[in-house]
Length: 67
Length: 270
Image (cartoon, rainbow over all chains, first blue to last red; front, side):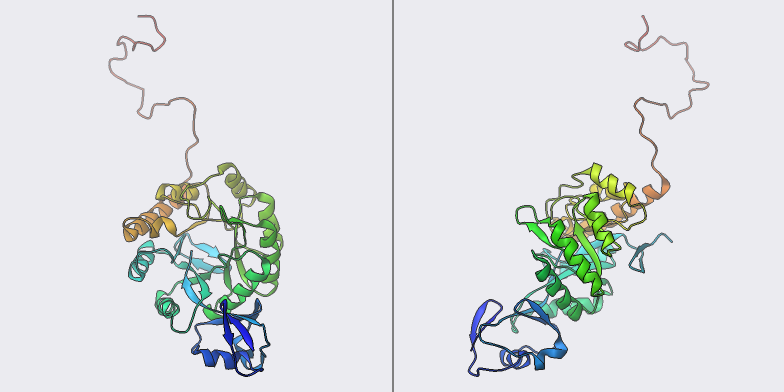
């Protein structure tokens, strides 16, 4: 299954999985990031029940300086 | 006490400051402290787990004690702005939002249509929206209609340092929206421009580049702090009216030598 994470292609062995599973695989820990799936916000409480599908695009963001 | 009141919160400082573009994180921290600002802007960007900037900012947030004002900088559509707003609320634990929906890459001009549409939805979702907007009265009214309680019209395009480009429009906003908190956001390049905005009756000033890109950001932060306070005091005190002709400030009564020869060119024959 091909997923785009922050603009880069990621190939997953399994053909199913959740946002929570992918975040764990990629090494995102703690609470200083937030997620959007295909441009829509995914609340932290729902990571475990949000399925991923082939071709999905995930954005994972963290705080930065800003004006 | 003359406090700035925004969405039910009161602030002693009328200077809001950005956290970007400083030479180093240490200078950013020092500058924000020197500015006296109680509201700081920040943002969200894509990040991989090994990048540490997120943690650096996070640590700073914990210690700053400031009201956080996350922005949606770079968003061009309501969909993008709304998604980023939701992500900001979750991470920063605040429903305050500096809403930016940009319609033009060249001068980073706010898209008034996308801005109003985004603001309507975000207010519905419980956000306290502070929109970065143009100085158009009707756009500002629409933003108020959809539930914004504060407006942040631009002084000039972001990062230009041009000051207050359209004073007629800005004065119009102040006169026609006398009870709405209005914050000049973007385009301020010098403390004198911030003072001018405050003298015109704006409630506060938000800036970033003018401090961050100064040769001495910490000192410039202090300069802006003083400038904003000075302009506010002047507005409160009430400026004198401008006049076309001179009027002596020193008493004319009992002027000695008053029979002296008139000055050449003063309209009298010599």
